Length: 105
Length: 204
Image 1: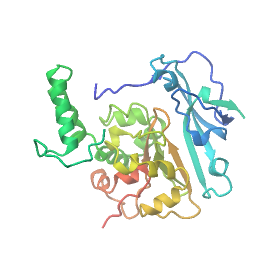
Image 2 (image 1 turned 135 degrees about the horizontal axis):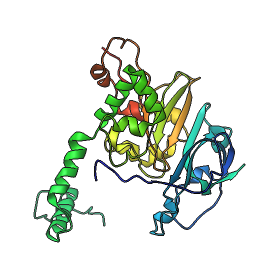
Image 3 (image 1 turned 45 degrees about the vertical axis):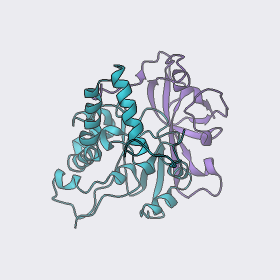
Image 4 (image 1 turned 90 degrees about the vertical axis):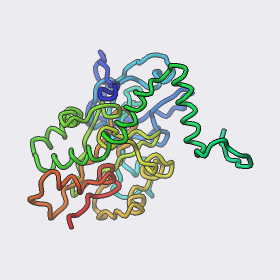
């Protein structure tokens, strides 16, 4: 158990909604359930860098409501897009976000 | 409830956390819910077998073995597993390589996600609200407090570990290390250099 860990990647049958290079916006929502979309990225626009396949969705799994795996993407945000004009120059932020956290921008 | 009043005598000399942990372990063992040998195995694993020495060995090999470095870049989970480092909080690994143009820093703004298999358990500062909130906002200022001043034209990329991917920073190999073997190189690779809050040591 210690050596094997507990992998959380899962097959997903649907085709990816996003591809590397796509511009996407993190949804601006205030759910009453657990989520792994950080507040500071909500509503901001970034670029998909990588698609990682399906992973267990924490929004449901954390509540014992099933794994509902969704595709996971690494999305890259420009510092000035997230923090505005006062952002540190040359800052890039990336986060790993589930498909349901994103819309096309 | 916090145990912050000390106007009475304790019946032992343990500090409050030690006393609480021992009481819990005793109760859980007597109820048959945990096996003390399993607890010992877990403690031994994270005290002696899993730690930043594992990540340092990975980095030193990447510095000296271009084929391994390519593998690490493409499939870090498999490349790291091939060195024997597998397990919890290392199931899905990604190695991010520093370059002269870009310095990489790892954080988990939402909790304390950290690549246990290569770095061990996270240090207190990594879990602190100050590090987690500030390093995505002003990483240069935070790195400066760690004693790391980056050139102004170097981009800083902060990787927020929001899902199950765990990140290992592969720092640049220090100058003056030509001819050093993997073991000597690994001794230069600090924990902070693999989180991105520091650089490797320079050989004396």
